[in-house]
Amino acid sequence: MEQGKRRDCLKDGGARLPQMQYSQFRKLGEMEKRGKKDGNGRKQDVKRESVTGFCIEWMWDLLFPRRCPVCDGVLRFRKEYICPECLEKIKFIREPACMKCGKGLREEAEYCYDCARKKHLYIQGAALFEYGSAASSIYRFKYGGRQEYAVFFGRSMAVMLGERMRRWRVQALVPVPIHVSRLRKRGYNQAQLLAEVISSYTGIPVRTDIIARQKKTAPQKELDEKQRQNNLKRAFKILRNDVKLSTIVIIDDIYTTGSTIDAMTAMLHAAGVEKVYYAALAIGSGL
Image (cartoon, rainbow, N blue to C red; front, side, top):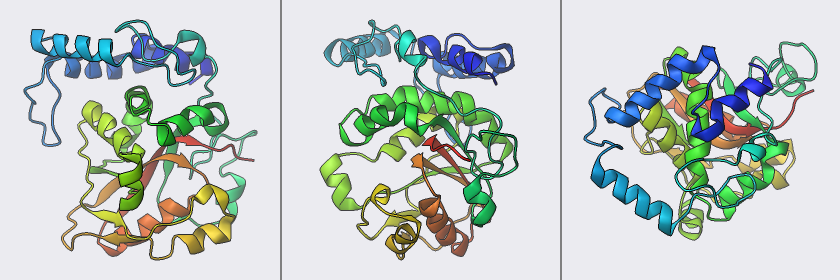
């Protein structure tokens, strides 16, 4: 999809879409109006158009105004999820892209430099933004308490990557867990926030009861590739012996070398999960 068309998809919270995406977004709109479905296809008793729901949202937006995830400015009341001019600043991943990790490539090729020389355990992955164009926004979302950004980010992932997840026949979304000490300090897991918003639009359930982070690891961004691998040794643990899922997608905010996804995939394979994919909010550029 061309860059301009991707931008049109997300203006006014996704109100305008190119023709190829219209039917997909219409389904999301119907879910919002009629009540969203849970993972078993049962309609939830939540109607955004109800008077009570409208009043609650009105009060919430009045007390905690929506902020643009790019410039952090206050948005027009109940009208947008991102400033129209700021949408122009975000670079979406577009073709050509690596067939394995999904990084955007500078020239036509099957795989990026990293995936051509390294075997990953997951089957395939996809990401929404080029990291460089959204780095400051993701930093505020992750470390600055801007949990509200998850609405725009998660909704965008659902619109742009949801159809791919359906083709993968995903049974569950598994957010990358953070250590309990970081969860206490930060107050939330940004990957889980993304997963919950994606789930609300796609109907794919979120599972946080399968895998946990048992080791407080150093931030991956500060390490080289080998250090990343060593950093993640015994970082995760399986929480249950009866993981009755064959296909899952790991949700994360940033994909760099794939070390975290591979470490989780190894544990999930050992627990009986056959197919593991991933979807990330942002990813670096490939060669």
